[in-house]
Amino acid sequence: MDSSQFTTEPSSNDTVECDFTVGDLPGLRSSASGADRAPLMFDVIIAGCGPTGAVLAAELRLHDVRVLVLEKETEPASFVRIVGLHIRSLELMAMRGLLDRMREHGRQRPARGFFAAIDKPAPQGLDSAHAYLLGIPQPVIVRLLEEHATQLGAQVRRGCAVADLEQDDEGVTVRLADGEQLRSRYLVGCDGGRSTVRRLLGVGFPGEPSRTETLMGEMEVGVPQEEIAAKVTEIGKTNRRFWLRPFGEGAYSVVVPAAGVSDRAEPPTLDDFKQQLRTIAGTDFGVHSPRWLSRFGDATRLAERYRVGRVLLAGDAAHIHPPTGGQGLNLGVQDAFNLGWKLAAQVRGWAPRTLLDTYQSERHPVAEDVLDNTRAQMELHSTEPGPQAVRRLLTELMDFDEVNHHLIEKITAIGIRYDFGEGPDLLGRRLPDIDVRRGHLYGLLHRGRGLLLDRTERLTVGAWSDRVDHLADPTAALDVPCVLLRPDGHVAWIGDDQQDLDHHLARWFGEPANISPEQPKRPVRRIGTGRSD
Image (cartoon, rainbow, N blue to C red; front, side, top):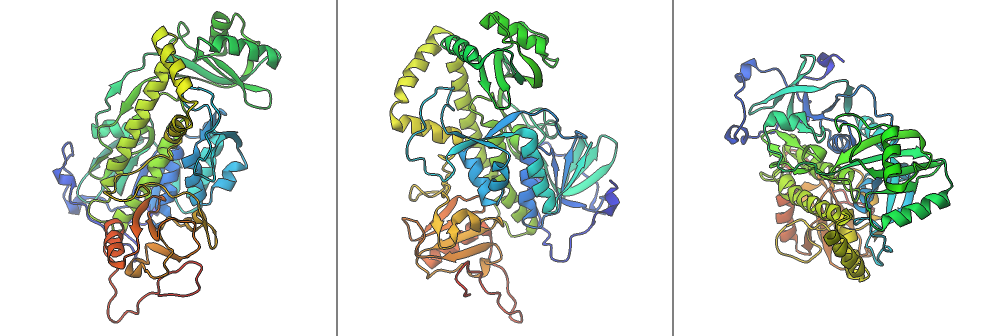
């Protein structure tokens, strides 16, 4: 694709933002003078078109940000690996009108057995309309998210690998492997655990290297299910990194320790699986016809920072950890929902001064917590006597509903509370999909805007109406008078005072829009009331 076909200057309604922090940050190279710089072709370039990159592209396009996604692979992955969307990710998909599309291609499972595969019933009272796990083939979820992004206007270029980058006080120059140069205001590395963007930035990736390797794949078996179940139950008493689980249509998910098989740098083979199955179970169960085969380790690393000037990191480029608990894809998708509206606000020119910095201050601690709980889970998979004793104790403790509830909320990310300062417990938390006058709350968030949910019918979003919607609904299922929701569904303010609301509107959504005396005031968009302020 010839980059010359793209617009080289902002459209007439674009607000050109400025970011003067670049020159003060370490590790940034000087660029040519402004007169010698290539024109800006895009607002944001995203490296990587996995789930994180595709969600981020779509979130930016909801705010008319010009987005290009670069994917080094020429074709989407062909192997059919099943991934799980946890409760919080399902809620976010519902907020953007994507959940029904996802459910058409997935299979729902109860929200249980997530923590170290300790199989306890799902706790009562999980505060979500989507309290289940949705298993969905990874190529399908990538395709659906990419289609969503392109339908909104994002452009995706495959077979394009980032080779180098250079940033200055106006933008980022990205050089591709074939020598082509592209220029944008911002660059986001969503390019995986071996991120080229992170390496070029020189951002540290401290943590622990992999100590334990595990084989994972999906394949068919040649023995009855009853025989498999009996053997798995027997071995599972002492070996937590071994299982065969049916996945429908005759396929099984197979997990087995990788010790003693082929070099870790080489892709595993079906013979590797057969060898390990015979070593541990005394039989290879007649496995055949693999759909996909992979190997993973327990390396655990977290980027020292998520932003250097105009370049940011998200998803596996910012954090890696073992797949126990199934949190990796979900963590990256949730990064994208947190970052998207903030980066769009920066590009559009209305972001408060510190808004973009809240991406790291909010998401870095969340990743730290995920890394810690995966470390704990991996210890509980150990066959050593000490970890097994702790596992037995935790299994007993999970019979207490409070413990089970806490661990489920941790794994599924519905227990996250961002630090927005002092206030009620709901402040900083996500608001569930409550009933409102027009049906359900999440149906009002498809456009990725803020929302004032007002039970008093006395408040207004005033000159922030270009960024925040207003629903005056005394019937809303809330225990507080009013809440201000950010585009990611987290509660940014609780109260009933207009002056206090205005302060928090400015905190999260910038200065109110300037309206000239000659220009008539735009009516405030009130959802479902039929009237304007």
